[in-house]
Amino acid sequence: MEKITKIITSELQALSDDEKREIFPKFFKAGKGEYGEGDRFLGVTVPNIRAIAKLHKDISLDEIRDLMLSEWHEVRLCALIIMVEKSKKNDEALRKELFNLYLSQTERINNWDLVDLSCRFIIGEYLLDKSRDILYQLAQSPLLWDNRIAIVSTYAFIRKGQLEDTYALSDLMMHHPHDLMHKAIGWMLREAGKRNPERLYDYVMSHRADMPRTMLRYAIEKFSPKERSMLMKRD
Image 1 (cartoon, one colour):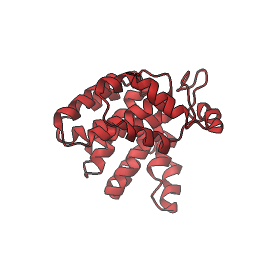
Image 2 (cartoon, helix red, strand yellow; image 1 turned 30 degrees about the vertical axis):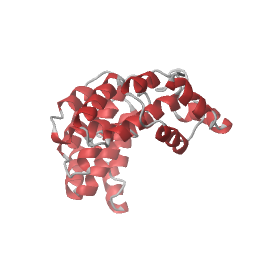
Image 3 (tube, one colour; image 1 turned 90 degrees about the vertical axis):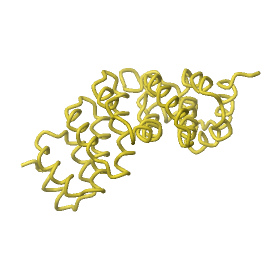
Image 4 (tube, one colour; image 1 turned 120 degrees about the vertical axis):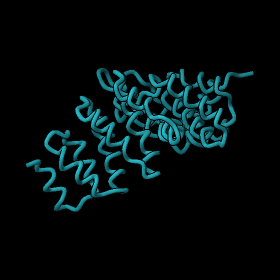
């Protein structure tokens, strides 16, 4: 039987767009010295990747693991979308297996779109009724993608009104050296602020002097123009 990686790669290649194949390496910073260095792109849009994932939603976890070894960004994204769909099933044993598989592959989940489209469901949703210690371990990992998984996974908690881990992880990674993390933390703070605007305002007021500017800008995006102007002054 033909290997699933070859089948899915062929199906995605058939949906390749020449213009996007040219643009994606620049958009996802795959050049030398950039955060996505060396990644390769077929030039397939997310809706088309989702369509292919839907066709193969019943593949095994071993086959998903094989897909995650692909050199192609879109093949790995397809694998992650399949994992997300499987994680929505009311099957605790399966969800645990997916959680463990995901954490074993974080070096392959190596761009912001791969993280952001998957971790909330596979990691965050799984941890809703469990210890969140793993997120603090990921936050202290030397791998950028582990750090982003840690904070973006808290989106699942935010949607349930659980804000503590978002703020605690923001404290822990406040001075992260990478702009991708400043954006991610600011984004999660903004989402937390939708649930409790007063708490976000107080948090920003107490941290605005040392919060990276990009993080601050993302966090206060939903505030009034007057509040944003005052907070960005930092004094």
